[in-house]
Image (cartoon, rainbow, N blue to C red; front, side, top):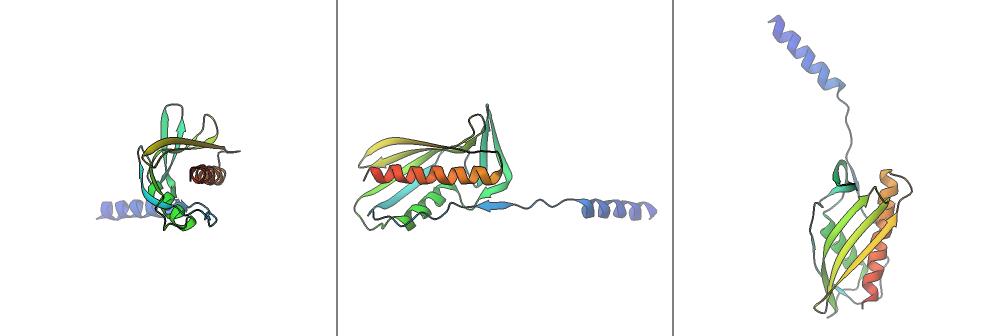
Length: 157
């Protein structure tokens, strides 16, 4: 009986002393409304990209357990573009997110997107420097990279 009480006390004290680490979720800033009349088709993702922030360092890929996107990249891109573009046009595009991560070797947020428009595929690569490795600095740089990607897409129409 004494053993059971002692074991319970140890178990309870370890539960009380455990630190809680909150999970943070991030989204892009809303894109401004565009005058472009473009419909957004299916956006897909290839690679290790989900809601977790992905950082590359050398040959390592690090998935952040506590800092996440509010949605999978393909859903987040699609939602942003469907709000920004008018979307009732016969002109439409779709594409594949090939890369969506933070490169610690170059201190850049990187997006590689294969845009398919009028049965032609073109690869768009955008990079945006971050000033420090804080999560907020990296999120701000990825937001800027996404805005650059959107501008490159609208140039095609």
